[in-house]
Amino acid sequence: MGGVVFALLAALCNAVSVIARHIASTADPHRPTGRGLVGYLLRSRLWLAGWGAQAGAFAFQAVALHLGQVSVVQPLLVAELVIALVLRRVWIHQAIAGAAWTGAAAACAGLAVFIVAAEPRGGNSGPTAGHWAVAIPACLAVVAVLSMLTAPATLQADERPDLTRPG
Image (cartoon, rainbow, N blue to C red):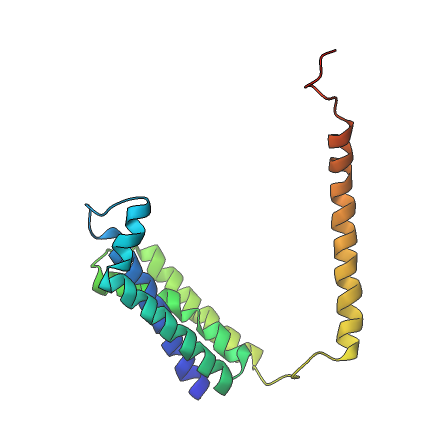
């Protein structure tokens, strides 16, 4: 249960971070552009608070992963998207389209279905020799196929005439 609470706190901090940095970087119409924008943002308390919230999200996620299972914690971080919509409405007073709210509701429903249907449990702490025996040849096969697919393009490029020489 502790993993769930800290995962949701991480999602909240991620959403606060995104919204705070968005406001800080776009609110002033007379803000500098280019390199001057970096200095402007580094002097902005709201922008720095956004980065503080981001650090908090990282810490909360680490604690959540320590206390809970990755198969529960990581999907819960999707809640950040829904929280960000609420924050945009409440904090920025931005109108949110009905389609966005429908998408948020669908994301919540999908997350709930995933958690219930997947019945996440703890797994093995590391891969077995059998897992490696399958993974290594599979990766080598993908590399070989991709190499063969790009080989004709390389050969064709080498066969093109040199247009820089006269004649």
